[in-house]
Image: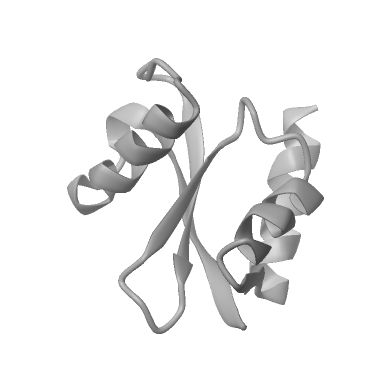
Length: 92
């Protein structure tokens, strides 16, 4: 299994240019219209050049993120899991 590490949480307007293709791909998958203030968590699959984007407005739980990563043969590293959990708690 690969490990997924949280790279950062960005609004659509501040997303680093190299991550925009991953953001746009996820938006297309979710049939989501991007809004400038929308926040997204970005995870890198360690040892690869692959990134996974999760929109915080539609992500229901850390467990849901873990399930999505499992489909890609990846798990959240412990620090990233705690960080995402903290962000999810703040959102409530």
